[in-house]
Length: 145
Ligand code: SF4
Ligand code: F3S
Image 1 (cartoon, rainbow, N blue to C red):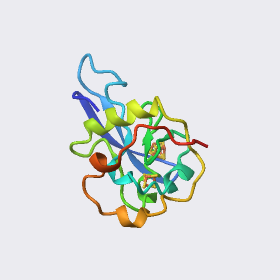
Image 2: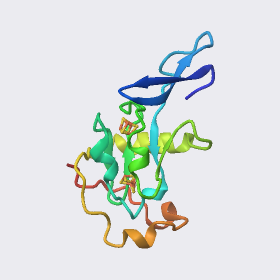
Image 3: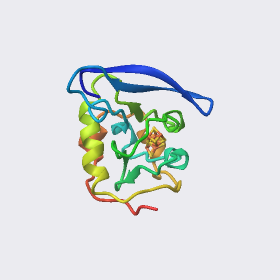
């Protein structure tokens, strides 16, 4: 979300969520678009609980993590609590800008995934590990749904 936008609480289908609107001259709805992002906590765990709840199927699969397409995500937030390792964040959290670009880059390369799979065999061993991006990240695509 860029500058010149204002957050507003919206409610729909029994759920409350944040939407951003332009408030400054020259700021468009696209500048204010929000998204959720997958962070490096997903790497080497890849539980895939998140894909089952996404109403617009905007998760994409790499070899050992998933990403969200920022332009397809409708900011509903239902995936965030599904992730057992809290790998999913809204881009309203601090320091998420680089994760938006990371998610965008790989969502345009990797195949879509909308069916839950078995997690990585040693997923539990990697849940609280630091430095997973440097140690394990692979640019290779996953199988997709
Ligand atoms: Fe899908 Fe909603 Fe999560 Fe965006 S916030 S990835 S639309 S479930
Ligand atoms: Fe990854 Fe969490 Fe989804 S570990 S695959 S973001 S449920």
